[in-house]
Image (cartoon, rainbow, N blue to C red; front, side, top):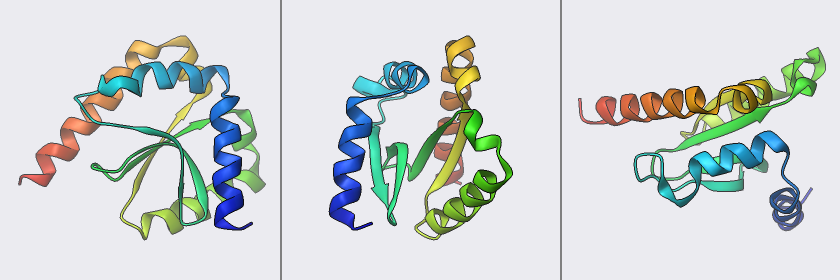
Length: 122
């Protein structure tokens, strides 16, 4: 699929988020998370990341049950390895975590970002 078609697909995904993605966006939008700006459905290396912070080079993937199927797990690993070559770290969070404990997800992400910041200045 061409880059242009990926952009069109990403726009469609932004228009029709899952419940978990909507909750995650509430956590990330308006720079609530330590004043870092996240984008939704961002294209990197021909893949669409659910959320991406360019200044941290941090991607967040929201995983539903389909990601537990072995074929999809292998594709996710390959995809993550390719994206990592661009210096992007990916955190995977399940739909269940986001829906059932959004405050814990917020804390987990905040702690991870603080760790990135500390490691950057060491």
